[in-house]
Each structure stands twice: as C-alpha cells, then as structure tokens.
Image 1 (tube, rainbow, N blue to C red):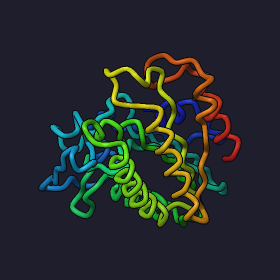
Image 2: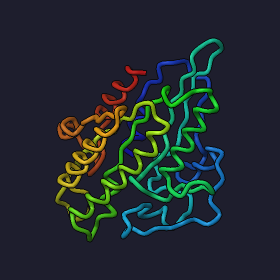
Image 3: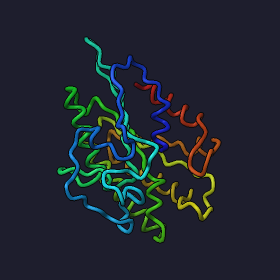
Length: 248
C-alpha cells in the first residue's frame, strides 16, 4: 500500500491517452494483464516465508492488500515518444498470489507481464525503470521465527526477485522499507529493528547490479506524521512522487 500511495501521487508529465485498471483491485490482475490463471495453484505456507499470508492464501489469484490494485497510464501520441507507467501489487519478496501456466510466483508473473508490455510497444528493457519494495508484509511471515532466520530468507527472496526483474528493467530502484509508529506493540508484527536490517540487506543486494539503485527514505519517514501504524499523511508520499515525476 505504501507503493500504491506513492504511485497515486505521481503527476504524469505527459498527455494521457490511455488509463485503465482492473475492476477488482484485489483479484483482477491476471485478467487485466491478459494472462491465463494457473489450473493448479501451488500453495505455500508462511513457514516457507512465501506469501500470501492472509486473504490470498484462501483465494487464488488475489493479493493480501485490498486497497491497491494494478493501474496503467500511457501517453501514445502520433510522432511522439511513447511513455507509460504502471503499478502492480507485489505484497512479499516471494509469493504465489499471481500464478499462470508459465509462472509459479507473483515475481515471475511481474517480469513476464512487463516484458510483454515492452514488446507490445517495440521497446527494450533499456527504456524502462522499475521501482520496487517489499518488507512490511514479509514480516508477517516471520512471526514465531528468529530474527536471523527471517532475515536470511528475506535476503534470498529479494535476490531471486531482483534477478528476475533485472532481465526486463533498464534501471531498478529499491525504495527502503519505512519505519512504523508502534514498533513495540504486540498487535503488529513489524519492528523497526527488522525493517532496518531488511533495508541494509536490500541495499547490499542492489550493489550487485550495475543498474541498481537504493533510495533511502527512512529518515524522511521518521520525521513524517503517521495516520496509523504503518502509513503516513499525504506529504510523505507527495514528496517521493515529485522526485520520480521530475525524472520522467
């Protein structure tokens, strides 16, 4: 949902000719993308550190997050360079919410879908920038597991995720996981200590890729006003959205 809020604040700097989104934000991604669903959905459980962790476990093709869905915005004018931006929900560093006959994870499906988008428009991966993050939802899978073990699995999953996206992204930007308001509250599984260690892991992983960049927003988040345990008031998202819009 953090990524969705940032996306929603980006002022697309080109004349919009196409805008679309699935009718069902939570469960409509595959039909929106024109991809068939897997006939036999392979389900993992949280003990494997693979999402979905809640709603998506019980509903094939659905994400845990209900408030953020895919959205596509494009500027395709005659004799003009084509520009588009798109968001899709990726709840965890590894999850099985979106499976097709050709892909067994949401991460594989994301790479396939994005490759299709570029090919359809006659673009190459050099024309694209991918902005990513997971972390807060991954910590829901860590309940009952040691800090060290959770971090090891997160590291492995992020490496696998980025190796997939590296094939379709000319540049990859990983936004740091943000702090939470009540890190010691037993009602919530997230902790700032784990988030900081996840950020350190992701930052080191990004160094492996020549086209990888790490955007550290932790300090901004610590100074921002919260509306609940994990989300901020609008100025936090507007500031990051303006940064990305200025680079388009």
